[in-house]
Amino acid sequence: MRFVSVFRYSGVAIDIVWRSSAGLTIAMAMVTLIAGVLPAAIAWVGQLIVDTVVTAIDAEGAAREAATDALLFYIMLELGLVVLMTGAQKANTVCQSVLRALLGNQVNVMILEKALTLELANFEDSEFYDKLVRARREASSRPLSLVIATFDLLRDGISLVSYGFLLFQFSPWAVLLLGLAGVPAFMAEAKYAGEAFRNQRRRSSERRMQIYLEMVLTREDGVKEVKLMQLGRLFLQRYVEIFRRIYKEDRNLVLRRGFWGYALGLIASVAFYFAFGWVAFAAVAGTITLGQMTMYIAVFRQGQGAVTSCLTSINKMYEDNLYLSNLTEYLGHSVAEPTGDKTEGPLPDDGIRFENVSFHYPGSATPALDCINLHIRAGESLAIVGENGSGKTTLIKLLTRLYTPTEGRILFQGLNLQDWDIDALRQRVGVIFQDFARYQLKVGENIGVGDVDYLTDRPLITDAAEKGLAADFIKQMPTDYDTQLGTWFKDGKELSGGQWQKIALSRAFMRSQADVLILDEPTAAIDAKAEADIFAHFRELTANRISIIISHRFSTVRIADHIIVLDQGKVTEQGNHDSLLAKDGQYATLFELQARGYQ
Ligand SMILES: Nc1ncnc2c1ncn2[C@@H]1O[C@H](COP(=O)(O)OP(=O)(O)OP(=O)(O)O)[C@@H](O)[C@H]1O
Image 1 (cartoon, rainbow, N blue to C red):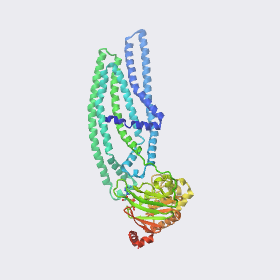
Image 2 (spheres, rainbow, N blue to C red):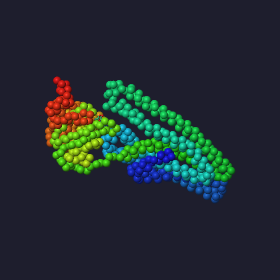
Image 3 (cartoon, rainbow, N blue to C red):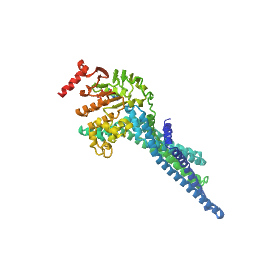
């Protein structure tokens, strides 16, 4: 039955909460139990009070005195129970506040730890990425909210059972009436909450588009084009259209839900006044005392309140389940086995070999790389040229094991990349991609992250900055290497595109120990003179290492020992600059085109 599904993730949520703090979870469970039983106990003592008052009115002498003593005792008892009850409620709120902070952190850490184990491909999968973003967005509230709703449901369940127990003494039919009167509203709520839950799930991609449009319209990197190309109205219109579609569905649901909630709520009211009359006439007939009458009426009213409260909890649980299903799917995502434990290869001087390597991006029909065979010898510099989309960056991604070849294998020092310990492999390879990171950190840290072991090694960082030609402009910054970069944080300095590239290049120069250094079009925004200087440094640094450069500038490419031309994922030509010119093929054509442009 669908209703049972509201409990589906309660176990998961309780487990997460338990791991945040076992003590607080137990405390919350105890408090729930107390808060569940006490209302019935309070109603029961209320009955004793009224009956004792009636006895005291009728009694005289010693009997009256005994009755007033008893009355005093019951009032004190009632007071004690009420104090306990409010204490339990307060303790519950306190536990929730403390747990909220602990739990938010716990869930966020779980999400981020998982993110560290994921592959690049996961981040490029839109649905999966959406799960990650949504999991993070509501991490601090949802698991606790589900636990609270579950506990509230239990508390109301316990209250209902204890009310039932009291009512049973009046008549089993009254218990049945209390139960049955709530059923229609219960069923309707379960149905509509379920529908709302499924709607939300189905709309996930529309919501994602809205979030994306919000981002483009409000973030600094999108705003420039939005203004200049006058895209604001268009995007806003799309945003509103999505809202309208969603709103229409939601409005219909809210109207139906409201109507049935009212209609079925009437059944509960009729049932209550029927019970009222029944109990009152029983009191008039003398089958129950005045105290019992007050108690049964209170119990019936509170019982109906508990039923309503159960409905609210179920409703919340559906929403929270949506979140938890997202979180557990994300956390349960199976991660490819970390392969390999070797920290060096059998042939240290063998360099890198691609043997019949092909690669398809997930869901793509055409291969991004098609049967690549390549040998990069130790100490050799390689340049890769080719048109946009020819597969240059993909080749680097395979070499750094961000992806695994679909066919063939890549060997480094005579050992298949898959057999390398991933950390050992990445220690040996330094790479700066064209879409390098611009960390909103200090300048020194932005360079130091090139080798985290030397994150704060100022002499090394200064040296790397000199080689990357960043040192000059860093010296002119307010607090040189301690200057905050970017616009996100206070006193942050924004850099020009070329300056950011120089920072990224300096980061590459931190990797002075790496065996392979790769620059993927890192100099596009850098002026020609600076580029020549940087490559002179790069050559110096990589004299005995493998260096790989992807560039569209032939002035850079021509100095490489070996050049390959990629075209639609295939190596179409290879050799050095002179031999490729002599071949008079694609390389020669591209070279001439560029050279002519400079004339
Ligand atoms: N993450 C990805 N998912 C799916 N396809 C991709 C992905 N990245 C690249 N591709 C596709 O793979 C092919 C090769 O892309 P790649 O980025 O390797 O080209 P490139 O030669 O580096 O191009 P450029 O000179 O523009 O940087 C392209 O057809 C591209 O559409």
